[in-house]
Length: 313
Image (cartoon, rainbow, N blue to C red; front, side, top):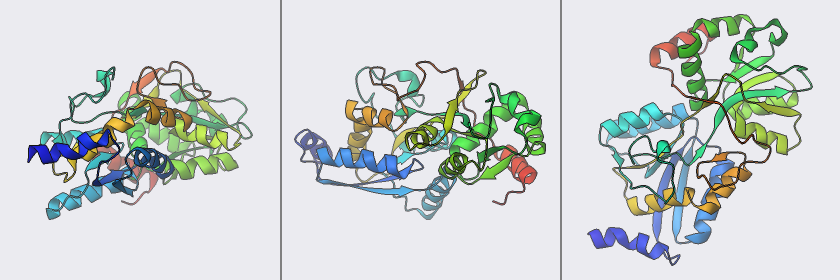
């Protein structure tokens, strides 16, 4: 059995790996598809099935399948490290040895159970046609100059927004969001929807992901990426191989591909900071970022936010 399990991986070096794997992810579908196409160019015998939705819906799907006794994903990749920790504590993730030489082990905080493959930050997106002076600090969003101009994604749907809520509530207190609401904070479902509306000038400032802003700027949008001086929020978005996987060696092969020079270059081209130290930085991005490690909002904080903003779950 062990020889059979290793067979696809051994053949992968010759482009002869065969089989299929299923990825559940909250990542932007265009970015995922670009990576899948590059992976399949090297491994044409491997089919990669992708289920993509917001982090909240991906987590709910995994929970429902586990309760039904029929989990399907070989790989998980979304912005909710707390749920990864929950799965790890139940023995539902497969430990993978350090995937490639020189990988920064601080990004394998699960001890090999899950890996960061690139970095993203929650920052200020600014439409310079609506806002003359960009905010510099998180507290700046409370100023009258930004009244009715600020929006963020829905933390029930977006894992990155759940990180924003948890991190800022723990550092600045929940009253920070009460005051944002009083200053006219609006909610959109997802980062891509929010970024498109920001680009059209429907908002002046958004709390959103840096890579998505760079993608809009590349299309010609009048936007600026502003990293808060008191810390951009580094959002964990780890990748894990599930313990129930029917194609674990193919799943590991895909994970290792995400850390390859080719995949890291694709990440940089699409606006992300690569995780590998020798990979290129995204165009226009600062060399160094003051980062805050994200703290995802707990259910009580999320419920409180929903009541504040009139959101339904």
